Length: 102
Image (cartoon, rainbow, N blue to C red):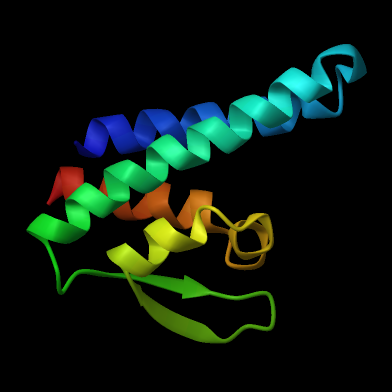
């Protein structure tokens, strides 16, 4: 499951990085990003069922530290502002890498 989460995070970051380069496919890319975040949200929701007390530690843009449950993270993946504000994709990726090596 961690590998699937890492793959989705990588995919989202790559498409987002290339979004500004290709205006002609930007509508397709935006639809892809929304769908990919939904898929990632479902993966995180499944993880939250097996690990209900697990939290993701994030630092917001103001420098404040927050601990967010995996279920809350899954809900936030539907809100583009939360994704950017909390740098969710990078934080989820870091969390999954840490769990794979543990």
